[in-house]
Image 1 (tube, helix red, strand yellow):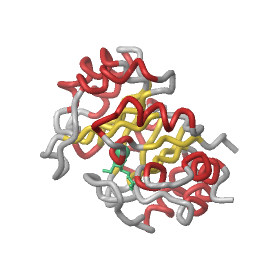
Image 2 (image 1 turned 135 degrees about the horizontal axis):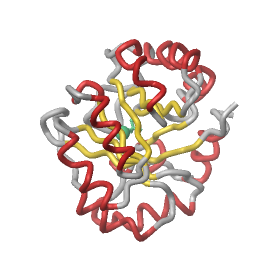
Image 3 (image 1 turned 180 degrees about the vertical axis):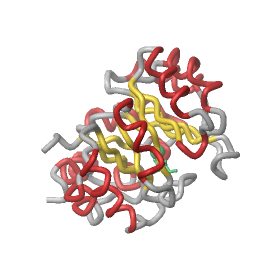
Image 4 (image 1 turned 30 degrees about the vertical axis):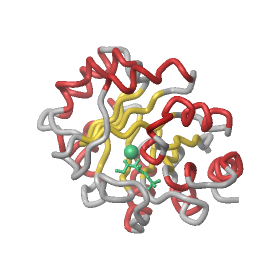
Length: 214
Ligand code: DX5
Ligand code: ZN
């Protein structure tokens, strides 16, 4: 079985001291920094762009896992590469030419992921799987932190794991209660925003997630 990695989402961090909030997850044992970029079009919320990511790149050596919840993501790949992204994930639903966008991300030296909303079937990206480093399965409808895990996604994780050996990241509503189902289904990268930043014992919850809920 693959090692389980925890990628806290800075969406739930205190943005007034973002650098310190990233150092805090680093010291608490996180593996990746999950960076939620929203444009107010693809999702009904806005966050930040590449300049903010660039400003905080220096505070940690952890990989930057950039989740683009934006329309026309191809326009912004160069900016996020320059800002220090290690893996860039685009939504299948936002890309007319998904293969082209993924090839472009790889050509810029970044790892590439494709994200699927809860209602989008796995079969939509089966032809792309050999090209990808990671598939991100959304387990909430994207746009906001602190939502409830959508349980139909557990079967999607298992369906994907049967045919895909790469990283499977799950994003939304992951906490000490929901983690065991997603790990048993085959996910190995766990995004958690409110569960990590809202915890009194941050190292404790990260350890629980890394242990698959045990
Ligand atoms: C939702 C984002 C998630 C979100 C996760 O649109 O992609 O990364 O911040 O937050 P929690 O863990 O609170 O559901
Ligand atoms: Zn995300």
